[in-house]
Length: 167
Image (cartoon, rainbow, N blue to C red; front, side, top):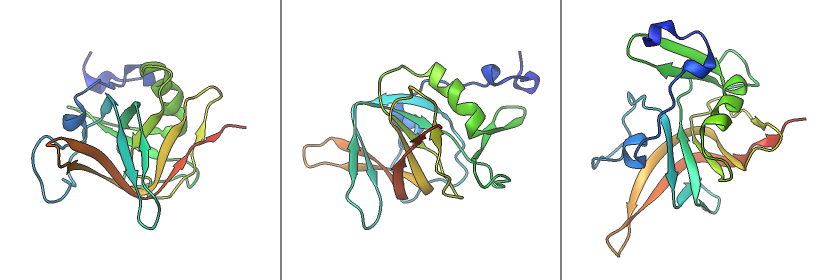
């Protein structure tokens, strides 16, 4: 099957990837690459969610899911996702993709969405979903060196919130 033949959500790829590759952190950089469109998921021991004027939140262990929002956001109550595949692009509302996402990642761990949310949409989590950390605004990824030679993963956004339970 080629990606141009995708006709259902189940056919969209969501690969497990190395977290540094997933978040485009495998090389030193001064600023995030605005053209990077990678997506997938990775398990992390810990990740820091940072926002200006608010204390940082450390989450872990967790599943980090990198997705991309489309430039045009037609629904003010949803996030339109863009999957850029080899031969086509697919648009999917987050509200439709979230149940499929939850079926694909390991259960029981908090989820962190590395996803720009330009409309600052407050997502709703399906019943029984793990804690789902969502940015309000754009998200950038960083690798912060530590004194011991290691590094901490950090996602920065204007604000972080937990998805509310669906009614």
